[in-house]
Amino acid sequence: MSNAVATPPVDAGAGRTVPAERTGRTTLSMNQAINAALHDALAENPRTLVLGEDVGRLGGVFRVTDGLQAKFGADRVFDTPLAESGILGMSAGLAMAGYHPIPEVQFDGFTYPAINQLVTQIARMNFRTRGALPMPITLRMPSFGGIQSPELHSESLEWLFAHVAGLKVVSPSSPHQAYHLLRHAAQRPDPVVYMEPKSRYWQKGRVDFDEPGNLEGAHVARAGRHLTLVAWGAMVSRCLQAAEAAAEDGLDVEVLDLRWLSPIDADALAASISKTRRAVVVHEAPKTAGLGAEVSQLITERCFGTLKAPVERVTGFDVPFPSGSLENEYIPNIDRILYGIQRVLEYRRG
Amino acid sequence: MAELSFPLPDLGEGLIEATILEWLVEEGEHVERNQPLVEVETTKSSLELPSPQTGVVVRTHGGPGETIDVGDPLIVFEVPDDTAGIIGTVPKDEKPKRRVRLNVDLDD
Image (tube, rainbow over all chains, first blue to last red; front, side):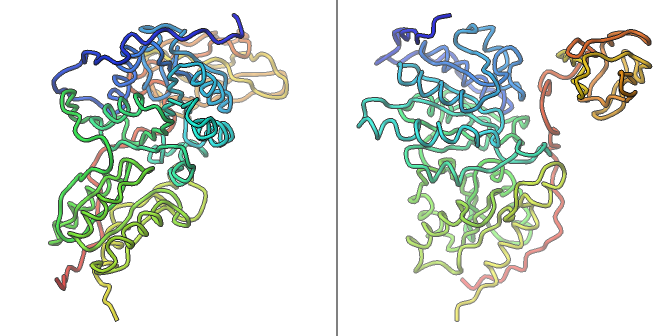
């Protein structure tokens, strides 16, 4: 095998609309929806590659890349050594050479060894070269907790990625969004960190291939009048459950799924909280310097005059993400979200 | 359904093989993760190996008295396609219990 990077194949679809292979509506689990999106991205663009630990022969530890190597060959869907810095370093080089890599970091906690490649190379290359070397890389990673995993297999790193200029960050909350947001991310010219909520991989949902809906910015997952829960990833479904519980008590709660964590859709935050005048941000990462602080400040800047109470945060604790069943004490549950709502309701000025 | 094969793991201390003493599970049996699978003997000690996986045993390799090299197949499981190889526990999608009740007294 030569060390030289092969000239990438000509993108036959460049500048033309490739006819969508999939049409209509179907029911898929999230890992199947992501598998379909990867399949279609590979089929659409001959320069798209999928690489990572166990993504080839095994088909991924969550079956997300199942069958892709058999369909597209080991040149385009390939296993890498257990070296995340190598996976992202190779992706940077492939992007420089004209490819569109979709690397997988097998678990979010395994990103730490690759931070140098991600922050000092992938995030900056476009800026450094004044646009000469864009990095069309979609970095997938099973993210957040909820599966009682061993240590470092469950983290909540959106606070870190969102702070790195040059990276876009997105997290889907349903199979429909997982399919379309991944297709959307893979077509962008800039690096996107795509955070898959691993505890939601097996939940099924309707996927409409013809109607992706708006893929930019936030998404109102549930409309309500009295208070807005702001969440992303796996916390969206938990907030929807909390909203159902609140409805039993007579409170009409809106759930805003941020989806894009960089950039954050400040207009959608303002539109929702201008209406409800109360907000609680929910995330799994520790509270201190978490993304909840940024969301809270964006709300305060735009809605200070109409807010009925300070924005409340319901988050993980300021400790390392616990492994095994201890995570149940750490990840915000329905009751902790309801307590957060109660604190907002009880606030009185003066 | 998918088949998952597990090799004899590296038992540490530079050991390169182990001898099967007794299988604690049978082919066709459903085993839980961490359930004892097999008792093996090395030149250092005898020990029970826990199951790395929940699933149905399809095949076991080697009978009592036979020696297996580290890295050679030890046992094969059958698992549902969508859970093959996963790490952690597939969460149950059940309606969560709530204990907190809201006191809703809106001043608007």
